[in-house]
Image 1 (cartoon, one colour):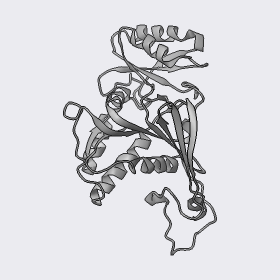
Image 2 (cartoon, rainbow, N blue to C red):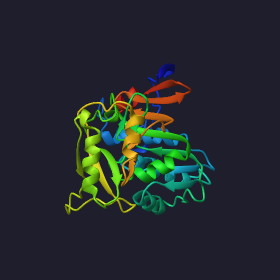
Image 3 (tube, rainbow, N blue to C red):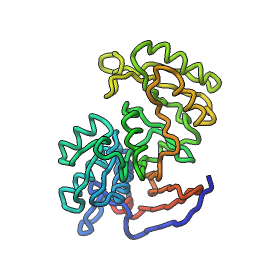
Image 4 (cartoon, rainbow, N blue to C red):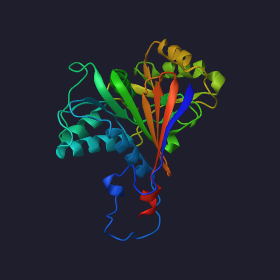
Length: 290
């Protein structure tokens, strides 16, 4: 995929992104010359930037996880302020459904709204082609259903999620499986990717030690790769051909844009045909203004 640097926006006097918790009143002298942005700050910055793309009257896919939570909070805030109206949310998990209900966001589902205008969600990994790993929170199936039905899918991450290839973080690539003979499914999955040094394990709840159960009543097998698995579409097909497999956490070609928040600023990477348009926004003034 070719990369086109269409714009490079630099602001030395005004922050492009200004979540409320990061704002300092101009009337108050800054308490110090600099500030260290935490990982949660970066997640919030990416989420708020993505919500700028939400317009009144939209059907919006509401993602799941610590980054997506900030986006849901922001949408609710803008609804309460009257800056957004007539939003319909499609939650991607029971947890997000509960969050949205508590915030007063009107909700529906894909049966009533089979086409979603915009989905916003986080990711566990993003590669240079904007392919993703999702599902370390356990909601990969519903996330993929909603996000594959979306006209636009904006992914929001902090810079730690960027990888050279899928599986490059050496962390889990989840696969949702039916509970029946899950160990058989685990062995077959590991066998598929023996060439990549794959190991796998059943995901368990930290508190009880029992198998983690998804919102759909299934189990999750977490796969770990020592090396690049190669062609993602072939890998996807091989996984989904196995009986007992429900879905995997590789989101191939679904992301329209990825917003990456880093310590120096925000980068938005968007697919435009066969090119990748890159827009950069710096917020040095925000960091130095504390």
